[in-house]
Length: 181
Image 1 (tube, rainbow, N blue to C red):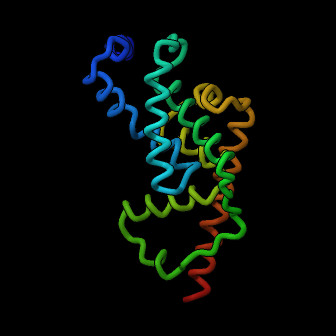
Image 2 (tube, rainbow, N blue to C red; image 1 turned 90 degrees about the vertical axis):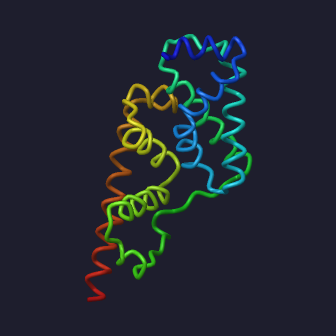
């Protein structure tokens, strides 16, 4: 079923279409919210709120962008607004202390992927958001611009800075491991 059919069916009140919409975009919403909100209960509640807002505002969706971009925009803005209201502290990358013992045991690809996601989570919110949108969710620069309302140059800059910070973290980690040998 294409996006237009799905939207029409949700707007006509089809419960199965609502479930399909949620199933199709649940991962995207979780990614967007999880980059900003860390508390499991807050994150779960916010994801539900995002879908309630999506369904309530769906009649205003005009297909000028992809449905996924529109939903990601709503999720991102709601997560940022939630964080502002709750005054969630951002982790300063320079203050992060690594548990080298645990990280030295990373051998499998899934463990490495989780390790990298944990490093990404330590980045400032804007950096990890654009990095997640670009690499994990596969959005293009114009789509990220639309979602975040940041200029394209800022998006590219944040992605570049985030990659540089991640590279530095990994290099620091490697130096610490070598020093232990």
